[in-house]
Length: 178
Image (cartoon, rainbow, N blue to C red; front, side, top):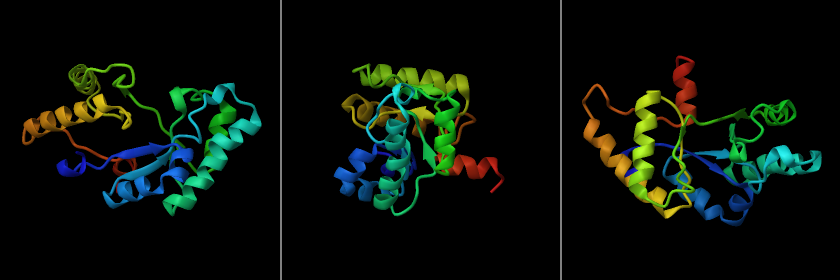
């Protein structure tokens, strides 16, 4: 759906899935999508000891680098937990990654209705005017909501409300004047 609409997105991957399903990584890379780290197993980082943090942050980074063919640049904490934890933030930084948080929370993981997921996304996008949308590619309702969102975005082309899509790397480059 994204490729059909010329949209590049950043996919935050769990290392356990990357290792088990490298063919999916290949498909995302072939489609020109950006790959990033979402931990090893989706554990809540703030509840882990140092050994657990090592696996979720450091091991995930090295395992993903092996499959991706490059070290991930971005990291998203599961559940958003760990954003204000200096130990977790430092471990992420020590891996050369930038921690990423979202400002458009679609709640697509709990809402099974694609139309309401889209409406929530649209409302937050209009309020924020820019930002990072959190979608989960593992839910059928998210796939359908993405189709609706792409149709909506097409309807805005050429208007002052046109949506400009960027991957995280594209955002960083734009902010840095590149």
